[in-house]
Length: 439
Image (cartoon, rainbow, N blue to C red):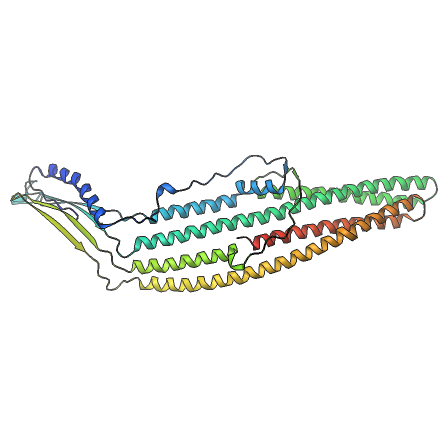
């Protein structure tokens, strides 16, 4: 409806139209100030946060777990995508807080006709400004939906960080395990080479048959092949870690130890996945409030002045218009929003149950891996190492055959590999437990 309506007739119609256009914004400002107020919680465009850009460049020559987590946070594309999604939701929140634009209408009538309306002598020009009032709560409902979406995106960003941290911890553990296996393979090749040399000397001295030297050299060849395999696996693990950190190059070297302490416990309802489900429920509830607001009626008001050209009289005018909610009361969207709430409630309940199961399973796996590490580290590996030392001394003295020494060395290598695997299982169990309990 018009906020201002001004009529003009005659040759000076266009000049008077320009004056009306100058007065219209002042009347509009007064009308909006009287009709609407801004609440203290209204979003301000000036509060928009600028998210940091994705870092690039080479990685450090030596990388610890702490530095790896730091680099992943700054370089990983998954985090950049989650940050961009949060920034987009914040921009939508600012957009949701904006009020409806006023409408300017310019109408030119009674020109280029016949008789007294020929040419521009009988022209009437009207300038109108109209503004819709938000009395049904549409703007507040829009803001509520946008705020719920911002909260959900913030939780999704936290989930992306937790997922990335889990992946980095697991891949860093794989890189450390590959480096440890490479060290075991190097030591195994050194022992096998030394054993082949000793076997050749014993054969030359007539203390061993030639078959023993062939067996020792074959064992050395197998150890060399195992070293090459371990080196390839080590490079693959470091390259995969580099890819997690947003680099197409392999990490040169991993250093330090992993934190193997059990993460603190957390209630299933406070985990990230449960919090996301709760945020989605809040979004559904906000959607219902918005659907109800969309079904309400928002009137439009107008205030202005009119000049009657023929008599020279002036008059104020006021107007009110209101749609009639006869057919469309947004009842379909309201019913859909209620169904969305029921679905979100079920999703929240399922997320809490699943979080409890993941925390319990991860805790069980962590405890089992810790028991295995202690058993191998405290008993099996030291005993196997001592057996190799005694077998080596006995073989050099000629008290045992070569096969017994080879068996002892193989048992020691197996114990070392099992200990590495147990440490890796403990690392992965802790990473899963930390992710399941993240909040």
